[in-house]
Structures are given as C-alpha cells and as structure tokens.
Length: 155
Image 1 (cartoon, helix red, strand yellow):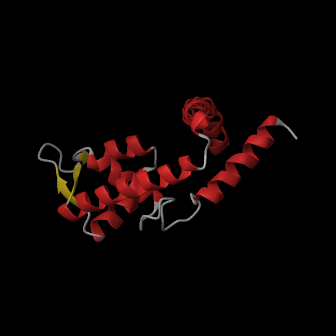
Image 2 (cartoon, rainbow, N blue to C red):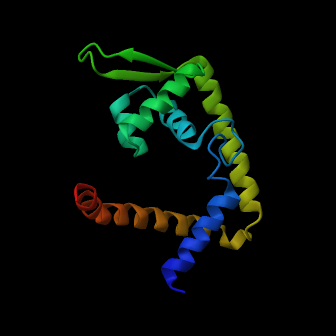
C-alpha cells in the first residue's frame, strides 16, 4: 500500500468517526449542515456580499445560494439588495442567527476540548501542526489539479 493509500484510509476513517459525512448535523452536534455552519461562522464576522461568501467558503454559487436560502428559511440570515448593484446581495445574521452562531461556536469548542482530551497533552501541538500542514498541502494540491480538471471537463 502506498503513502497516498494510507493517507486516504486515515482521512476517510477520520471523516466518518468525526462525523463530517453527516449531511444535517455538524461533528459538534449542532443542528445544521456543515456548509450551513461554515456560512454562519463566516457571517458572524459581519455582513457579506453573497459572492464574497462564495469565495470564502470555496463553494459553487448554486451551493451557496441553497445554503443561504436554508439559513434565511430558518430565520438566521437576512438578504438585502445592495444600493450600488441591483444584482448584488448583502447577507447579515439576524438576532436569531447571531444566537445560533454563538451556540455553534460553543458546541464546536466543547467538541474540540473533548477530542483533545483524548490526545496526550504533549502531542496536542503536533496534532494542530499536522492539520495546518495538511491544510496548506490541500490548498496547494487543489491549485495544482485545477488545470487538469478543466481539461477533463472540457474534453
């Protein structure tokens, strides 16, 4: 088995064990999908144009539109047309959305504390360092694969 196969097995096992594969609940037990929770966290930083949220989440426009629609339906997000561009939309958390974002942040912290409690204290920094290293590697590998993907799609 190759290093890539070992990594794939480890990542898939972690995703399942951690709960990232569940569509309607975050790994921390928050009652929302993972993309919804990420959007909520991003909007907690302040109002945002919908297209900026697309960029920050790294999702397709149609996916973000569905996420935003779900958050609006739950009463967590409001949409407002921008004054300068009738096509642009500004998204902001409602009071209920701000409350949900606080509950999400708390649930996430509790889940991370419980997870880290299972890691020896002297290895916790290693876990964070490896995750950051994998994030950088994932970003770089995505950029490296993008030209090939567009060639494959166009063929």
